[in-house]
Image (cartoon, rainbow, N blue to C red; front, side, top):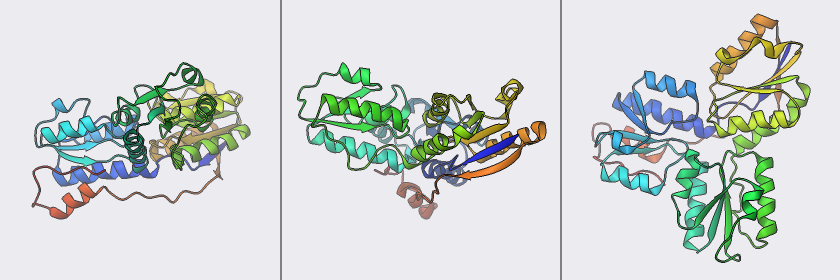
Length: 323
């Protein structure tokens, strides 16, 4: 058996930044540190932080007043920010800067009186946060069929944004439908789908044809990880999305000679290595590193956290979150 190891794979700059934020906050405050939603959508990462005393919450009512609170990489709505201020929480914004970019675009279009069409998945944390920026002016669509059912007040004053972790191919189908229905539709000058999502999808498109089976490391609630498995499956290659080696089934590898391994943007490299070790041990696999694109993106820690770390014992009662 040969393992084709996709590059790039795994953690992106936004995930690295969010995880470092939580690690530094735990070191600084000690447990418990509270996080609104999962810091990133990955079971292994979340479980590891739970073991260190992190408390993940779905409501700020669960957070004692004046406690340290992190916003996850997926971002939050203005309503959550205001609730954190009213509860005098020490809020640290670990939102991925590329998600913040979409929020700022939503604010801009809303101020200019546009109806904003957000392409995304209903119920996803990122979508909930983005729609909170302009709930009265934003409409969510997921498919081209959703676009056909749209009705807006002024078809000449429409703009679209996208969730950052979508399938590029799927998003382009919806965007084409929007342009057909609203020829004058506005959009940001730069693509909303993040560089890491696009790069990992490009790697699967290029490499999957060389494999008999694709293993994607990532959690089921990770949108970008699911898209990787869907792309391989759309090419006719059997694909499995797994959190780790414990979910692998022996039957998958009958008459399989080449396995492509990749990982979603929130999946840690150690779970990738465990799967490699499994295939080496059980199937005598050899490894071929396949490089499709190089990544050198880095995001600094948010200003609110840097100020806390610098202030030391001179802590403010409430930290202003970054925007």
